[in-house]
Length: 403
Image 1: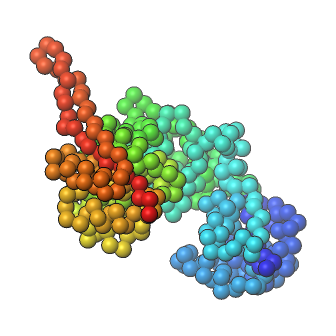
Image 2: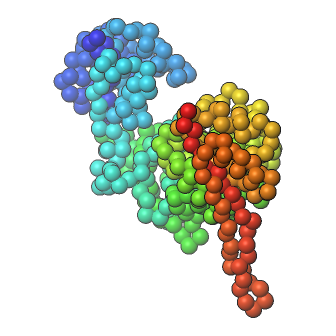
């Protein structure tokens, strides 16, 4: 069928900045959805019914779908397909039923004002999202363009940067981009004292770390000290190899069963912004560690299931990969995990004790895959000399579910 829904990106210059196709769609619309600010841009030539976004905003999609078949226009800020309403509606409406007319996004305008190549900047949105996602991108030299939640976001980001010894970072607040109220505020995170900015702003951050800056590579194998833990932690060298076997891919879901402090799930999610993970942990103290670690390391979306496997696995979304770092010998855990795994999914399990290693061998005979043993030693002083301190060897089972 012909498109019944037109999604129009609009800037701070209002209707005057729209092209001919967008103007014609507005003139012929029966219904126009948008925020109050956008609807106020419209003049009397646009006669369609005007409907402001509902509260809660999550109800907006159903409201639009209830007018299926009518000439409906949705007004959205900038590029509707970039953190916008178009991206949301595209998950519910076939593309042939939509006509999308984008406007330069806030990020494009911000990059132009900063003279930053857009492809070289990291684009983030904390609009309705946790501020802590920024932690994963704090590396010296990195350039961040952040869509703010409101006028308090720049001050909150400055405090976050100072706490990580990134106080030397340069901050630029870009308000009302593309409109008559456009304004720019420059400063450094350290001593930021510019007060509340306009609610509509993009924050540009040029990351500069101090001597004690807490900056972590996106590559698997973060230092053990990066995680709050009580010793129940897959150590750095073993963790890096384990994640190589898990092989995170964009959009995939991991179950981290017996998650401890959450290190595997956290590093899985740091591999790509669309990677998801569920940490299953029964120990109350470690549950708190997972909650704090996911924030400190920039993956607040890590889901925590408080309970003991296999019972706690019931009803969870089927995973693309599963890691069992502890509890492989517990009744029903390995079987429940294998049965829940998607076809083509990966199961990786680590063992330290003889009993758990024997069970890995039995499972390898049953489902195939490969067994790897890691023996890691670190140099340590002994009197006036150095010796190798051997850690307990770890056996890793890595298997792919073929059917």
